[in-house]
Length: 399
Image (cartoon, rainbow, N blue to C red):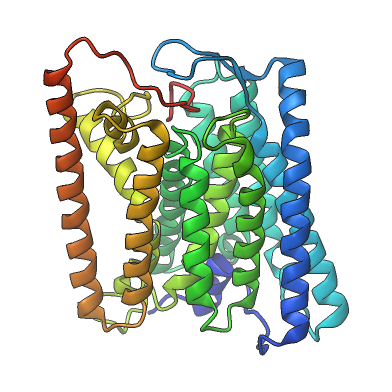
C-alpha cells in the first residue's frame, strides 16, 4: 500500500494551496510582505544588537574563535521579527483580497514549529557556555514533531503502514539535517546568510513555474529578512545571527525546499521518487556538502561530531591565503553554480538528475581537495602563520 498522499501534503506543504494565477493581486501582496520583512529586519537587527550588549549575550574571542573583539549575538531575533511581520502581512492581505487566501491557515503547525526552533536557538545563545548539544538536539526534534503533528495524529488514530512511518522518519531526518547544516555554515561573516539568500532565490525561480505560490512567497519573505540582516554582518560584523537565526532560517529552508520534491516516495516509481529530492539537494549544495565533509573528517579523526573546529571549507580557504571576505565570496560562487545545476536538474529526466548529482559531488570533492592542497602548501611556505583572520560566529560546540 502506498503512502497516503494527504499525509504527504500535510508534511511537505501542510495542505494544498488553492489554484491561483500569479496575477497582480498576488504580486502586490508578495511585494508588501517582502517590503515589511526587509524594513523590520533593517530596523530590528541593530536594536537587538544593543539589547545583546546590554544583557551580555555576546560571543567572546578565544579558543577556536578568531574574531578580534566581543561581538553581540541575537541578530537572529531581528530576522525572526522581520519574517513574522512579513508573513503576517501576506497572511492577512491574502485572506482579505484573494478567494481562499494563500492557505496560510493550513501551515499554523509549521509556524509553531519554527517558533519552537527559535526558542531553542535563543536558549542556546543565552546559555551557550553551559548548554550541551543534547538539549539543543532534543529541542530541534520537538520543533519538527510540532510541524508533523497533524500527520502523526492521523497515523496513530488510523494505523499507519510501514512505508508511511518510514516517510515520517525520513522527514524528521530531512529537517534535522538541513537545520544543522545551515547552523554549521554560520562560521564566518556573511557566509550562512549569503548561502541562504542564494538557496531561497533558486527555490523561488523553480517554484515560479509551479502553483506553489505560498511557498514562493514564504521564501521571498525569508530572503528579504536575511538581506536586512546582512549589512550588519558582512564584510565586518557588528552582530552575529547566533543559533537563534541560523536554526530558524534552516527550519524554514527545509520546508521551502521540500516543495521542490513533489513526487518523492511515489511507490509507483522505480526509485520511489528519490530523484525528486535532487534539485533541492543541489540548491542547498554548499551547506550540505560542507556539513557532510566536516562530519566525515571528525569521524575519521575519532572526534565527536558535535564539537566545533576550524576545518570547514571557509576556514581552510582563509588558511590558504584568502581573506575571510574572499573565502565567503568563493563559497557563494560555488553555491550559485550548484543552485543553477539544481534548477537545471529540475527540468530533466530522472537518470540525468542522478548524473548531474554525481558530477556535482565529484566537482565539490575536487574543489575540497584543491583547497586542502593549497592549505598545506601555505602552511609549508609559512610555518609560523597563526590562525585565520575570519570572524567566526560559531559557539564552539556546533559550528
